[in-house]
Length: 267
Ligand SMILES: C[S@@+](CC[C@H](N)C(=O)[O-])C[C@H]1O[C@@H](n2cnc3c(N)ncnc32)[C@H](O)[C@@H]1O
Image 1 (cartoon, helix red, strand yellow):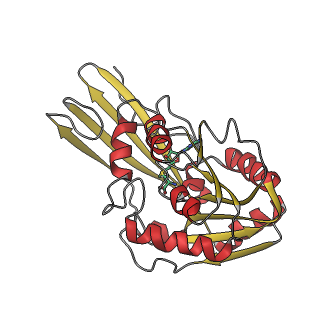
Image 2 (cartoon, helix red, strand yellow; image 1 turned 45 degrees about the vertical axis):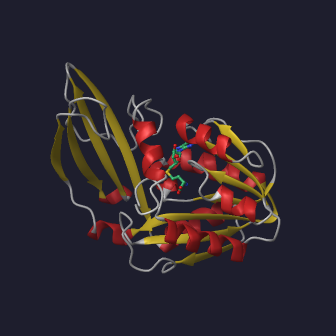
């Protein structure tokens, strides 16, 4: 058993993933479905605001794709508005829940970086600052796929953290002991958590060592943040014609940082 407490190399991937781990993905589903919590998905009142924002920008009855759709909290609203909707996620528990709930929505259990869905869409969404969880190379591959799968004048709407996030994060270490189990494991565990900042590369890494009896699992989660100019230049380089940035859509809120920006990028 070896505890890893070194600073990860930028965008290093861990062997385990919080979204696909068999036990943790079930806990994530519970968090998604908690209407009053901002964990995993935003709370209901913000979801409604974001859906309205999306609908203001999208043309009626769009063919829509939601990347990292979770249990379908956004897809179901879009389908109610007569959009033809596809959602993709690699969390099996969430996709099973979503598929069971709505038969009129196409759900794909898959990895949108490795196996980007085929098809042409008028609207593509990716919500909860998930773009920031990917390495710059995976992000670029994904953005190119998004661009090519949009119809002419199609739009991509997503959120990301701005540089203001650094006021809400601190490097450090903490631990959590749960004698009867909890979010990370069903029985007794010890979780060692570390936060690392990469100011030059505008990223944070959250590294977790999960200790259960005599085994240890490591997880690394990345969070990349951007200046307005950086994200605009990046999207222009991919080919997007019009980019608008919306900074106060939700106002001050209880999300992990209220420094998020919503981006609308038009092909
Ligand atoms: C923070 S949750 C947000 C879910 C949803 N967008 C919402 O706001 O309710 C991120 C979701 O993205 C999914 N995800 C992350 N990386 C993915 C990938 N490479 N392929 C497919 N799904 C992914 C996770 O499984 C998770 O359901």
